[in-house]
Length: 211
Image 1 (cartoon, one colour):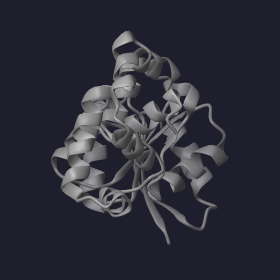
Image 2: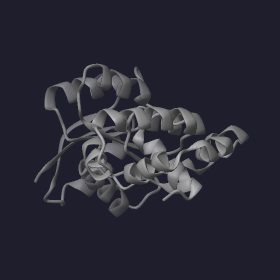
Image 3: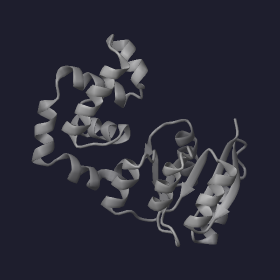
């Protein structure tokens, strides 16, 4: 299956380098190259790519604004953030917005290519060291320590299933409950763990040793 990709970076040399990495790969096809946020949104609207490889620090409309706009328009392209550097808030906000891939530009070509494939397949492709400080600040406070203790055995079981990639329907089937009950459990879990997405919850579970 061909993976259609849009590349976004304000440096043409970076765009050229990325495309040169992807060009020999039989399953990757670059359908557009963009140098700012406006071009990125327009390219996604036109080409409906499978994966958007996006630098957050771009002109006219930064990467986070691009992600928000795509979500508002229900454009379901998966996003791989590829930046030279991210601060804690940028990294967390990207994950909160549903980004499944976050990789630094010093990664090897092979790592970037595999991240594109992983994001396309629905896997979480986030360099652990990249989010460590941000996750530490979010997870290791006193409130968070109390939250872990407050999880019921059933909630902890749901967290473990989410962390293994199961969807609500699959969780409901395994636990013998309705999807509505699963959603109620997840709502309570998100409040207790101070997380807001399945990706953040998975990272939380890994950091806390729940999985």
